[in-house]
Image 1 (tube, helix red, strand yellow):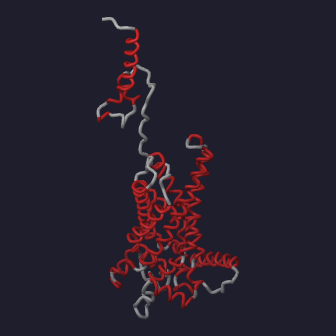
Image 2 (cartoon, one colour):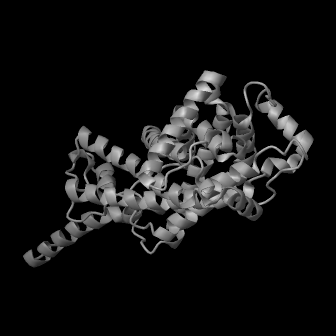
Image 3 (cartoon, one colour):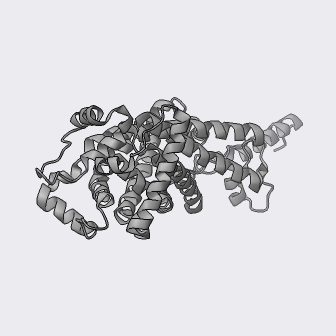
Length: 390
C-alpha cells in the first residue's frame, strides 16, 4: 500500500523521536536516574555516534570524605604536632602549677605588655635550660607517652565527631539542596560549625580526661629527690588506689569549659578556610587543573596558617581554664592528704585571691609557643593525610 509523501515525512519524524526517547524507557534497574541516555544508547548501538539531541547528565558521584579518614588523619596530625612541641608543653604545665609557680616566677613582671612578652619568652627559655641541666634531656619529654596515648585518640575523636556532626547537620538542616553546592561547602552555616565544635569538645573531653590527668601528674613529678611515680601505669594505679576511680575525672568540668576554646577555634578556622576557598574560586575557577603546584602549596599553607591563627585567638580568650584544669589535676596536699582545689568555681576564687588575676595566665607564652605551631602542624598533616587516603 502506497503512502503519500507527506505521510512519509511524518513517519520519519516519528522514527527520529522514537530513537531519541527509547533510551529513557529502560527498566527501573537500568533507568536514566542512574545512567545517562548516551550510555544506554552506546550499549544498544556500540558503533553508532554517541551524541544525541537530548541527554540527561550523568549523576554526580559521591566525593565526600569517609568518617574513618578523618579519624585516622586527625590521630596522625595530633601525634606529629605533640612530638615536636612536647618540651613547651612540659614548661606550660609547670608554669600553670602552684608547685612550681614561686620557683619560676622570681622576677617581678613589668606593667608594660611589650616588656612582659619578652620577660615571658626569657622565662620560658630559662625553664627549658634549667630542666635540661638539672633533670636531663628526658625531662623535656616527660609525659610524652600518656600525651601521645591521649592525643592520638583525642584528635581522632575530635576530628571524627566534628566532621560527622557537621555532615549530619548539613544534610538534614541546610537550606541548600543542590548536591553540587553541598559538595562545595555552600550549605554550611556558622551555627553548624558552632554545634559541631561543642559536640566534638564534649565527647573528646569525656573520653580522654583520665589520660590527661595522668600526663599532668607525671609532668609535675620531680625527676630527682622526690619522684613519686615510676611510669604511667604506676601513676594510674596509685591514683585509683589512693584517691579512688572518680579522681581520674578531676578537672573534667574545666575540660568542658575548655571545649569552648576548641569550638571557637573550629568556628574561626572554618570561616577563614571558606574565605580562602572563595578567593581560590575567584582566581582559578572551579577547575583544579588550572592550579599549579605552587598554587596548591600556597593554599595548603594558608589553610594551615589559618588553623594557627584561630588557635591563637581562641587561646587568648579562654586560657584561664587551662590553669584551673591543671590545678584541679594536681596531687593532694602531703600535709592533709586532701586536694587543695575541690571544684571549678572554688579553684577560680582561690587562685584569684591568693595569686591575683595575672596568675590565671601563668604559662601563656609557652602555651602559645606550643599550641600555635602545633595547630599548624596538626591541621596541615591532617589535610595531607585526608588527601592521601581519599
